[in-house]
Length: 292
Length: 184
Image 1 (cartoon, each protein chain N blue to C red):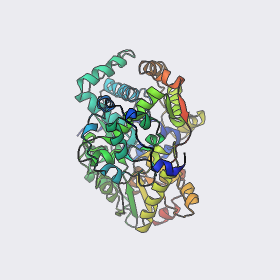
Image 2 (image 1 turned 180 degrees about the horizontal axis):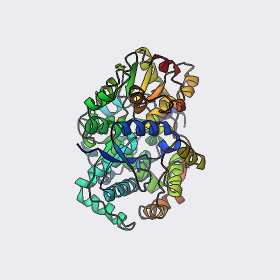
Image 3 (image 1 turned 90 degrees about the vertical axis):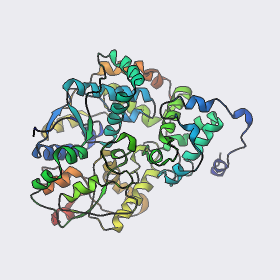
Image 4 (image 1 turned 45 degrees about the vertical axis):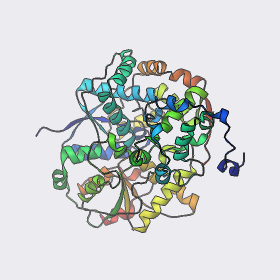
């Protein structure tokens, strides 16, 4: 079988403050035989602009898709938000001829045209569909059998259901759970797993997202998970970077390390914590590393 | 206005109601099915934001559109509390895309009232200036090299400026009034 080849779409927040997600994803994907090609140029996926101007969001997303079409390569995103806007724009512009015409009118001015010739996938989809569970299992050299973790897939990996055609159930997502189990770690069920992290509104209101995240952290503590595993930089920031602030706001102590999935998989594949940039996590995973 | 007054809205006057508003909304992308809402309340019951907010109620938003209470809707800052998790979209028994409707209302708020939360103005301005919604400092670029990561591609700022122009976004940013924080 030919090596899977993807354009890696980094988005904004990963290069801005979550290089550890990128570093670990590149390590793991490289070892698993995925050929990652850099986007020759790109801009914000468009997602953050949807609230203020839907046309702007569509045009920004479509422009990125055109860059990928020119390379004749599918896009791999690490961020749920980028996946949401690029995948949805790709899908609706392929289906809605009138809308495609409108967007192409904008794109013509920058010398581009949306043709609808590529696909957009999230890291989790590439792992499950292009590499496959068997091959990932074979790559696990140090199974994390002593580890009990919880997962948070994040909304935009599975919702809105009619836009995401990768077979996962948004009411009971199992894709990330199954990917976690391949590492040898136990993946625990907990209360209200599918609830949103709250991060998308943190710029306009902190109280509500803090309460949402605090409740989630409590549910995860109840089942005694040793770490939380995410596949979205925004969810990750909510639970890792903001965890000390949430602890202060509610006079609580969680001390729950939050790992990007490729960091967990990377440990199981035999990469060192340094190679996976685990030192860049806000909540230090030292207790967890002693057990691996 | 005290908080209790917001829980009990003032009496709705007939002249406040724009009977055509729901038709206008149903022409906006994502809001096409607004007329099908039969007020079951699933959206509010399953909304993660409504659980912790005293003001944000998607069911109420849908009803206010049907009643044509445009001015009340557009002056309600709670619109900006939706986290676009799409739970309401997936759960609505009538297929009404509530999150799409909230997005359409926000867009309308920006377009007609020239109002948006400050954070969006900042994100849009960064995007126009550098291609990313966050300003990535030189130290970050340097660190990428140290960490063995490939350099970030240069976004085409000229093209971005054009896209902002065509989509009316330059004008939108110039005249906008901003909201600092939205109370919950």
